[in-house]
Length: 270
DNA sequence: GGCCAAATAT
DNA sequence: CATATTTGGC
Image (cartoon, rainbow, N blue to C red; front, top):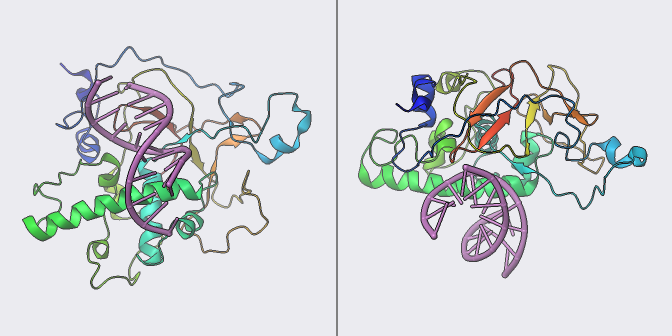
């Protein structure tokens, strides 16, 4: 019996289509290293420079700062949700990487991150509309796009007007981050024991900010910070003076290929 | 070796 | 900024 399946709540499994995707194979999960992520981890945590880090030459440590390659960004459902919200709010025409990035105001998020994601998202939308046009009426139904084609994209509902170029735009509704419908879509409180896969690697992860937490931007140079209205509370990376502070609600999330990833979104920020 | 998502190159 | 191609972990 696939132990993976039993450990996941049905709705979650549905939402992300974990485990029974014809498309995806989950290889056999090796025994999970319960990798307790202590804040003391010297290297892994704040790879991307905090302002002090680069400034604090003292450090004595290894901080080529410039030569440091950024960890691979993981697009969690939450992050993607924010992305979708931003795009929706901007309207298709204004939704270009830079603007989206600004609106999202997630620190550590680069324009290229967004651009790459946007590219994939557009392809996704294209597939989506071609199906809704040709095949049938029902988008979410079985037409061909089962909610799992892309785990991530399926996790956030696609605003209607995204699919209709003809009479596009108007950011009409798009509630500001009300924890509305989407919340039930993925109330992912995955069992911590869910199958893990291979060796951990360093990912960038983001935490959400305290309610009124002001944000500094670690490596967003320029004093001209965001002059774009934000969608919700800004999110900033969890690098904290060089060590990661894990919130209580740390949550495991497995993305498509079984990449195991630690995400730090305490509550439904979305 | 394939498949995927994200990164990087054009 | 868009699109194409490469990378790298599974």
